Image (cartoon, rainbow, N blue to C red; front, side):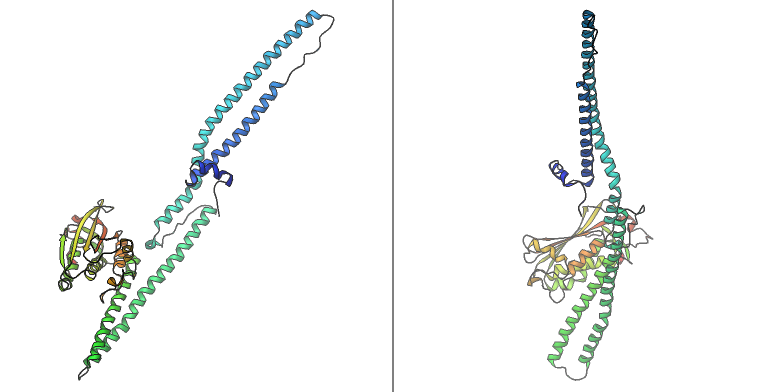
Length: 423
């Protein structure tokens, strides 16, 4: 359904550059055009009336033929008066037309302001609905527009949007509940399968090599499935937006704890770690569990998809952003590795996306690592940026709002001191 200026007005508005303007500008132009049209018609009518009056003539009454001299003088006087009257009438008509034209110009300018004001008042409810709709995201679908007022088109639109938000909220909740319940329920058969393998291998007597090999492989696959289910649970929890363990913690110490926990994997692959700025001076606010998972996933990605004998660079730095003190803090983890295509690197933040056979995993990957990082960063009002390095490898930058570290480490702070970052 199209709305706005009529089609005959589309040509002039396009030439004036208003086709792609706001609805308020288009309505203002329409109001002014209608005023100009009606004013022009009124001026034309006034001009016709004025010119018709000036063309009218008066016929002097016939005098007495018995007194020609007196009659001739009277007729001359009458003609002179008629000429003076016609000139006065023409002058008055011109003054009326000039005054009308000046008033028409002044009212044209006034009509622009009035049209802009009236259009703004008419469209203000729509702007309020637009602003309220923009504030509603997947994390606060429970909010509603709840527009008050008469039962008009704007209220019908707002009520329709509220109904749509209600259906979306129900769909999101059902999806989250299904993922969480399915992931939780599937853990029971996984545990049973692990126990069955342990019982089979623990039976007295020699175990055939093929059986032991098959059992080891099944246990590896079960561990992979368990990690996948755990990732589903983290995604469901992150997108739900409820943090039961929120507090302040130093991002640098979180990164160092992730590196320390994987020291064996780093040493086994011969990787060199370069640290910078992870002294614990940059504090962030959020879920301790999720932020640790964020750092773990980024470090795991840098280790799993690195070259043997390569390197990992970890840096925590301040950035201009929208944190509590006007800045943000970024966790930057770079790694060596194969050369990647930048146009495909952004896909790594999507679930189950990998770049070719070299990123198909080493038995530990599930294809959800960086997508979980993106979800956690978004839940903390942050962002994830992935950049392919020119000489090979990947640069992962997680930017989070920075919080004040002075209150974070204060004694008796209800949010803790961040000392529980270490495992």
